[in-house]
Length: 230
Ligand code: CTP
Ligand code: MG
Image (cartoon, rainbow, N blue to C red; front, side, top):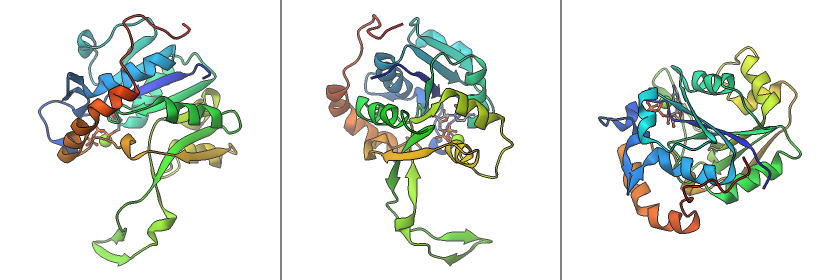
């Protein structure tokens, strides 16, 4: 697989989880949630930038030559901007939510393959529940569920296009790949995975516990030395 840069977003406060510490620091088996994507991505990338709420937290996180820690911003987008400002080293960059611990080589490969022909590629899944539009507290329309997709991460970009999209005047609610599309870039969906779910509310941390062993069999933890090209 081609080498790529990664932005791991971990500067949120996890309000929906309603726990004492942000959800990315909750213990999932023998290590915190954030360490799962950090460990896996450090097997495949030589340039990782992690956004944190507070740089004091870095003492308990892996210290490797290819990992840089930066302070995040108020919004998720501000955190992405702070990571970009730290300097992206490679032609491709993947933006990943630390709250999705179970990232695999398979999805990284699919995204990198797509980036050979498009400027942004990201995983999507069909929507599980029925959907209504909630306008002024009246549920007045039931769109067909089959026309919607849920967006997952990691989201892949040509670095120069991510930078352009972040400079573009913000379209209301447009997520970054959509901004790239509006700027004339090509965007592709790849098939996501139910295991790429985002830890959000309490039940999802219990679901994550049930998947630890299977995940670590598929993605063993890296040795302390970096086996990627630095
Ligand atoms: N994130 C970030 N900087 C922010 C907000 C979010 O880096 N200012 C990160 C989170 O740490 C998370 C990912 O973006 O890994 C996805 O965001 P979300 O699931 O919304 O996490 P939180 O904002 O922490 O949770 P909540 O919305 O419930 O407060
Ligand atoms: Mg949030």
